[in-house]
Amino acid sequence: MTIKDGKVFANSRDVAEFFGKQHMHVLRDIDALIESAPEASSNFGLCPYQAVAGGRMYRAFDMTRDGLTLLAMGFTSREVTRVRKGIPTSDNDSGTLSVRYGLTNKLSDDIPILS
Image (cartoon, rainbow, N blue to C red; front, side, top):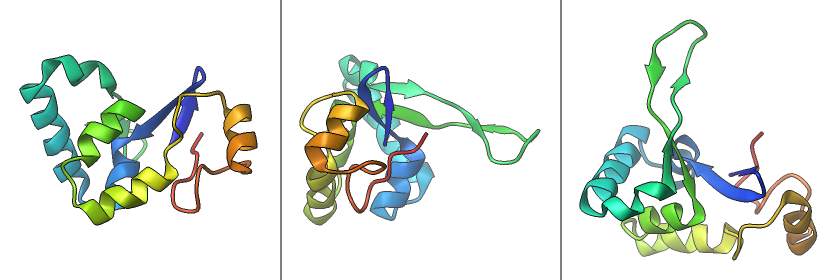
């Protein structure tokens, strides 16, 4: 998870790793969410990346807490429980998150804040 402009975001690649899923399956689920509920698309921002410098661009999404929640609702209850323990209840700046959770560089033991 990252914090941008005081808001918490999760990247689809990190979500895939956290839940033990293939990134292409997470992308498929995000695409299905956006197609079935277009109003939810504002929770997902396309952010392409290069796996190798100078290589081809690959799709990835940054998602808001609400986007992550919508996505995780399609996962198994065991997977969702792991995420519910690690997501802040509101979008706060990193200082507030650090104080609230007693952490300086991670939101939980499982979800690191990436810069």
